[in-house]
Amino acid sequence: MGLSSPLPAGRLTTDPWWRSAVVYQVYPRSFADADGDGIGDLRGILDHLDHIADLGVDVVWLSPVYRSPQDDNGYDISDYQDIDPMFGTLRDLDDLIAALHERGMRLVMDLVVNHTSDEHPWFEESRQGRDTATADWYIWRDPRPGFEGGTPGAEPNNWGSFFSGSAWQWVPERGQYYLHLFSRKQPDLNWENPEVRSAVFRMMGWWLDRGIDGFRMDVVNFLSKDPELPDGEVGPSGWGDGFPYFSYGPRIHDHLAEMRREVFDPRPGTYLTVGEMPGVTPEQGLRFTDSETGQLDMVFQFEHVSLDGEGSKWVHRPITVVDLKRSLARWQDALGTRGWNSLYWNNHDQPRVVSRWGDDGRFWYESATALATVLHLHRGTPYVYQGEELGMTNVDFQDIREFRDIESLNYYDAAVNQLGLDPDTVLAAMRRISRDNARAPMQWTDGEQAGFTSGRPWIDVNPNHSWLNAAAQRDDPTSVYAHYRMLIALRHSDPVVALGQFRLLLPEHPAIWAFEREHEGARAVVAANFTSEDVELALPETEGTRLLSTNYPDEGTPGLLRPWEARIHRT
Image (cartoon, rainbow, N blue to C red):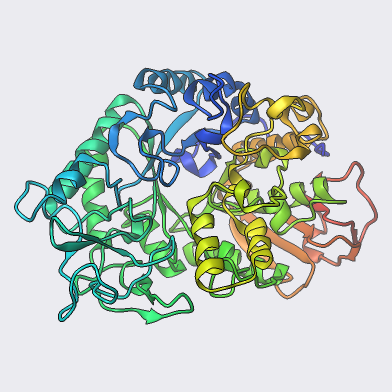
């Protein structure tokens, strides 16, 4: 809630600038619909920029709005230099860039260059034959020796796709298979071909010259594959695990270093480069983000958001606060003062954190703000996913027909129709972890369709918008939105929060998440109760400090943390 004493005056000047910045992710399809067709668009974002600006964030990360068949909601791109008509036009994007810059914010675009759409002209030409101009722009292989192409077992290796089934698709007119780590409509580009790299770098430069401020790079650690493409260990799905052979390939650092030299170094200004990297280790993360030798500013790692899956995101593994804080602390320690962390609970691929690891019932407000406090007080750049600043929750999907996500639908088909699993059990897993939880429309008002659209939304709104919405929170000093504003202002003004070193406290405590930040002799101590019961707290590190913030209306009882209470102490 309120602060017990004023924040330090002024705004920090940090070099680089993103060390004291906060990023807000917009998933355009679900943010705001200006034309009533039920799908969010660029004009809808423009109409709601004040909501983002008033939060105090520095950067808007825009999920893909490029021209696309929408097989994977825009992560299958058919034209990198045009806007899909469902979202608007290039002029609309230019207007958005200008409006953000006028408000002192920057725009980061999603860059998806591990793969394109199979409707991209590059691929349409490549699939026609082995002597076309783009013949080697994708990863093509002959059938396995002794097998006829297109028959079971003829795939070049046994890798499975992230979206179920084989990672290979047969093309009769070419007489070869192409690799698709995701949907069959998302063929992987061949980054070993210098012509591919050159074309991608030119496209990136075109966007930077148009005025954007950087890129969030989708599965960018997958660009380099083991050239032998060996079979992987077969898992429960019946397909081989190719992950060891493409998650940290032999030339990934070379490719990213070339990208920096060709795209960013020749241009004036400081751009933001963020690499989404499933499976990256802390040691690899440091190598990517080292302030002296790294190729990227920061990485998205998946360790903490994979803890509650047992071999698969769909198989639930209960976790504890000890699991979570150990994971984040491991990354804090490994990247230290040389690398830089991305800090996130939510994005378009993750369910809502207040439902996942909080208490979205009785202690909805307290757990939403406790989770926010802990995350934003770590060392790194925090990311806020649309609706997170309101405490939006998972959706109680009841029927398979309510889902839209290709990953979820493919999983249901494989689990129920191929493996014979119980449909109710499969649906329960989907309700918990499906990406559609994050993709339900933004909840603007308590009115029809949550104020998202005047038409029928592409996916149903969460019924709890009747009380959980932006209009109810924007001017309420005790709201989740207000708490996020406070945390963002604190990062902007307090060098301990933006730059301080990190030390985990009480590492084995089963309920309390506590840590210390220190910078030039000044300290901040954070203590949060991650349960729905009172917990006694003895924390000597808080002696001689003042209580800067709590998510309760009063300071409470010394030595006791109330359910989901989060306290920030400052020297």
